[in-house]
Length: 234
Length: 129
Image (cartoon, rainbow over all chains, first blue to last red; front, side):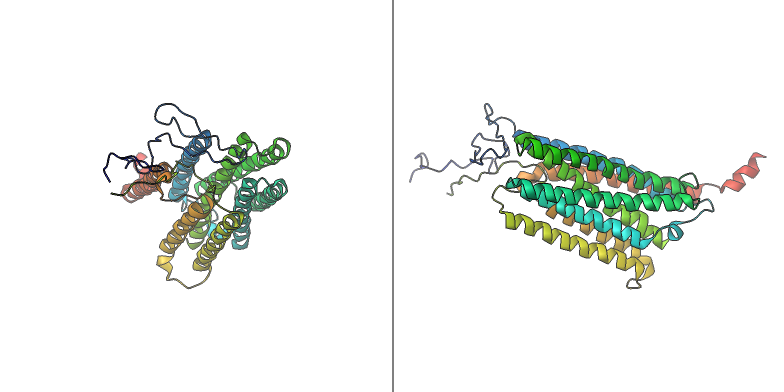
């Protein structure tokens, strides 16, 4: 068979085997209005779909958020032994409370993931239920953290006591603020899914919320490891 | 000569479930992630609150377990892969990790040297008298 002969249903060998350059042969699955708005594009296939661009842009934002957290972590790592004669982490931290907070956040990350699965098959009931459980676990996390903070401040170990405690309240409080903002977002998403249904724009917001919530859990891994568990050893 | 068949490879963003994923598979992935993450968390706490590990090795063990758990979260919860359609996401993550390493590592390095080389505060104050 000569190389110039054209075969049906095959394409010529490409210099771009993975189609990173978008060669314009995008599939358009009939997904029943799933919200994957494939771009029609011009010339070489045009830009990626909005679904991809939104998620990628939000991923970049989350990475910049992680970079900001890393500055707070660095400050805490530098200042952790600067207790100025005040209490150290070993005297202040309650392991069981940290363990409960960790479990709440990990389980909420799991249920948040289940909401993605439920939303992908357009199941209103299970989407709402898994988002609700996510929210309750997030609230439980915040309640335990607030209780920890209140106990510490009541015993005179507030942020103004030492550089160690300033950096502790800064980094843990910043994470708590993120979780609070995430809960507001979660409530908004539940309302939007309920009122607007699984339309494309709501699906994109759900995806971004999922990314946000999972990244908060990743930051909490760093937090309980560096701040709590390593602080315990000192 | 091999002809390339239509591969349907698109770029995907982070957190995407493949459109072919069935409900059962999707849930199973999250369950695997949850179990692995829970085991690694439990191991982290066990390292600190039991005498399983030699004292000076505890920080290294904790960092290893934390990095492993972050990997589990990235793979099973954020669906980050090394597939070609994920190149952009992985490269962005790599850049983020580079900056984080520079900030944390650099701060600890510089501040550690300052601590070693600076005169203790009470001596500085005596010289100022």
